Length: 416
Ligand SMILES: Nc1nc2c(c(=O)[nH]1)N[C@H]1C(S)=C(S)[C@@H](COP(=O)(O)OP(=O)(O)OC[C@H]3O[C@@H](n4cnc5c(N)ncnc54)[C@H](O)[C@@H]3O)O[C@H]1N2
Ligand code: MOO
Image 1 (cartoon, helix red, strand yellow):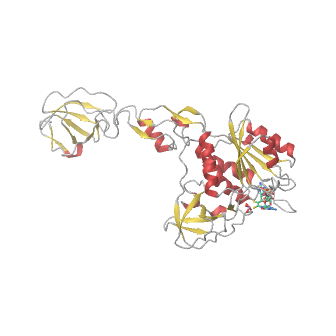
Image 2 (cartoon, protein in one colour; image 1 turned 120 degrees about the horizontal axis):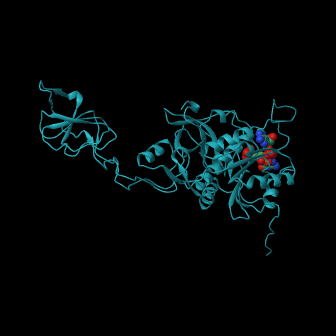
Image 3 (cartoon, protein in one colour; image 1 turned 90 degrees about the vertical axis):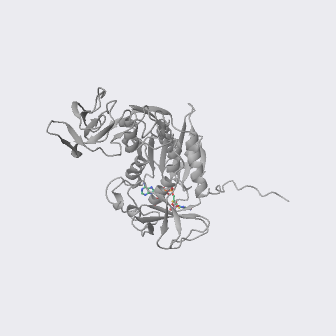
């Protein structure tokens, strides 16, 4: 029997959507960005490259938690001084004495308790009287953390809460992964870059939008890193990609992912010696999305994410492939998708995963499919919180728990 000859033009089978995400994360993790030292003010959005440990016990000294009187022995007490926050007080050496103390001040050695100012009174002789509460009114050293204790693991995203904690632990700088640098090349020289569409021309909707999404995923994108429309020739595509790859860790491209007469992305990747990580994904919409890896002459690894030209499909490729890639590059854990309950049916897409635009009802914890969700449309996306994942072979029924791929929205957007 003769073996069937391989069809030289047959496309590779598409990767499953989950598999594509795992591969994108794994190649990013294997090429994690270099570790740098940054001052606290520049840390927001970075990722810890070392565990966050406290340099001292927290608190570092016995700290009064109320304004009042640090007393020794039983009262009434004779006033021998005052302790304000910021210094080391002299010890209280004699029973029956007290010092006035401010919240946050170091409790003097020898003090037996602290009496709240509003629960104290003065005797006619000018002594302090009152009944201290049974619970201590000061914080003990190490109550929150012991010296050297690890508070957050490697891979933790740095947010304002983490920055505040790092400062309270005595850090001036932290070791973090360098922020990824991204570039965008818009393919399709028929696109309009200003004014209303018409007469066969559409506005470039991705050149203005994709950099903003990339910044929300933590990338640095300079205005000069956004280039296009690139001329519809192979040489222009190769030149634009080569230039962008010299400084970007990730180059996103839009359009040209298929094999039409002016689709030059695949031949350009071949010319650059890129290897596919993912070449088409069994997902609707967004099927032609791709991710490729380019190893430079210097050994540095860069990535090209090919976002399909249909605008909603391009964003779908961002949330599907680029988000896990960036998590890997930053050394973060695999992104875990939140779940929600479907409020209305959503059809399946046969053997493909269906990513359906949904709005989240934050009170009910349900997701609702939107209208105007064609892959060439952006109207649905502008009201969406993310995409419900309808797995291959099934349809989504009301009451089903489904994973939701979130859009990287900020607080206050979509009414949250
Ligand atoms: N024979 C086939 N043709 C197509 C298939 C297929 O399976 N067989 N798949 C379709 C799917 S699905 C998609 S998605 C697109 C992907 O095409 P490309 O990535 O090659 O993109 P283009 O052909 O350049 O453009 C597609 C579409 O999107 C518009 N576009 C492109 N860039 C932008 C932009 N920056 N802003 C707004 N709109 C943009 C462009 O005008 C086209 O209408 O291929 C299908 N074809
Ligand atoms: O996958 Mo295309 O993105 O369906 O329009």
